[in-house]
Amino acid sequence: MKTAKHAIVIIGIVALLFACASAPKGADELDAAIREASDYLNGRIPKGNKVAFINISGGYPDLANYILSDLSKHGVNDGVFSVVDRAQLDAVRAELNFNMSGEVSDQSAQAIGQMLGAQTIVSGSVQQIGTSYRLDIKAIEVQTASVQ
Image (cartoon, rainbow, N blue to C red; front, side, top):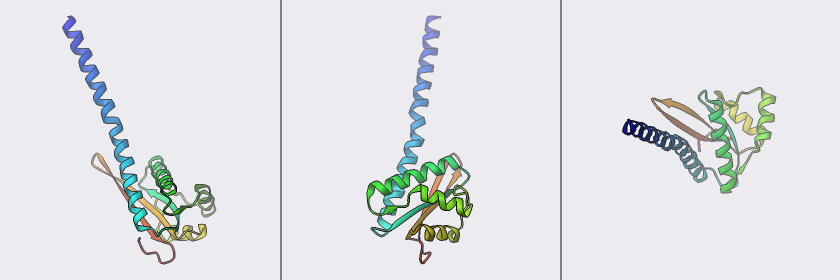
């Protein structure tokens, strides 16, 4: 009887440890992907440009806000380019009645970038592929609409 109780406790502890060990892994992978995207943008966007982080589409608004916030934070902290303040972006979004967590065309994003005085706009998407997620980020030069 005592051995059965011990076995149940040990199984419970192992299950708890497994759950705790696997939970942060997804968050760590997301943060690593955001950091990797930031590093890539740092190498592609000309030094000193003003950048607006516009939207992340895919149907996950909370996740989109998290990604945009972290990309913006890295942009500011890395000091390669300047970042449009989210309050300015929110004001333009309200004026143009856009939902930034949904699909925004490149032309609409370009217009937003022009209104904000940004040289570069950054947008992206999150897609679920099986049990994993894919994060795609792109930077577009506002004046020429070319992908950086």
